[in-house]
Length: 174
Image (tube, rainbow, N blue to C red; front, side, top):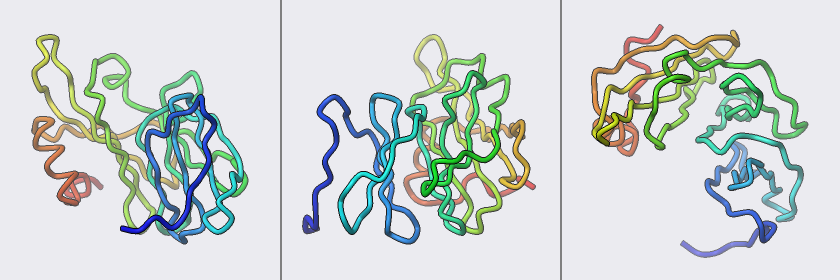
């Protein structure tokens, strides 16, 4: 791949993840300072910053909104309008997620039609072994608590499915 441009990030920030918007006009960069920076892909200039938790995030293909971890006091995700920075509703994580040590790899997924969002996570056992894997599922038109679904798999199975692009969470989740 050829380099087509550079984007400047403040020296104190370390980019952790980069996502391109569905229309290709914006790049969202999460950083180690709990800030998401948005850049215009044509001008390469920063458009805005939004405080967000350093966690996986996903663009909603049908709307261009971002499904990202909310920095509020309740562990939750939010839908974010990258153009205005406005957040729509809170998608609250389960009590099990809130009280159970989990692996650092927790992919956020959104269906192509933009109707559902998922967070896949796994229990991290005290001995360092892999534990049960779960999916937090939400309908994006209905903010609120998640529907917790056990996958009956380990983190290795979750990782393999995620990396292969399989639709892990959509089967069997209404």
